[in-house]
Length: 109
Length: 115
Image (cartoon, rainbow over all chains, first blue to last red; front, side, top):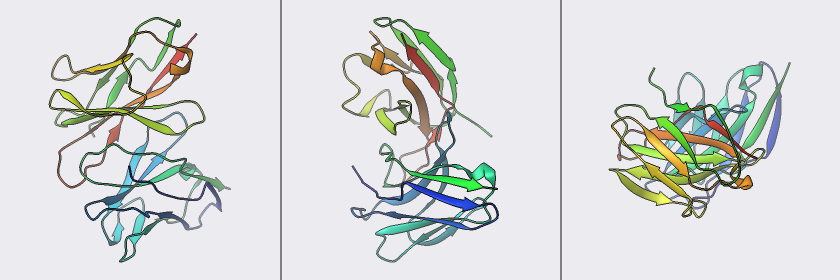
């Protein structure tokens, strides 16, 4: 199963841009990189996915370098409601998600 | 927006009792999953289900667990004889197709408390 590495926690002030980087050391050719968000006592929620270069949606941007060994989730102008745990994954098809401890983002007013 | 639903939201049971957790996946989805999260710990995969059979299962998913899709809409997880360590949030998820990658949509979870 794919294993990723990401920081345990991060703090940010409201209105700042937050970048969370993940290492995908054993990513396979067919794998996509995905990020999920989880609020306390709720199920994980899909944020964004990409294969390479840059992807942007209404919530975040995802930067993936050419070697695909890492990815960076960028949250523009975070608010208190962005306080959550963020998980990165790399997988293909419908393989199960393997959750690590994620990155606990705390947004401070 | 379509969503995965789960019932009940909270289940309290005595050790040794059977429980059935219910999920209604998004209607056109073909893959179904159960995950669990013990309080304060990471989300763990239990089982995936496709075409009316188990696709993959983890070491956690032992003989005490079973899954079923009894009709065209429900997807259930049964724990035959609950143990204290089964206390956790149980999340159901579904995804659309087999192509490349498809995001998994998670339900709100069922909090299982075993006394």
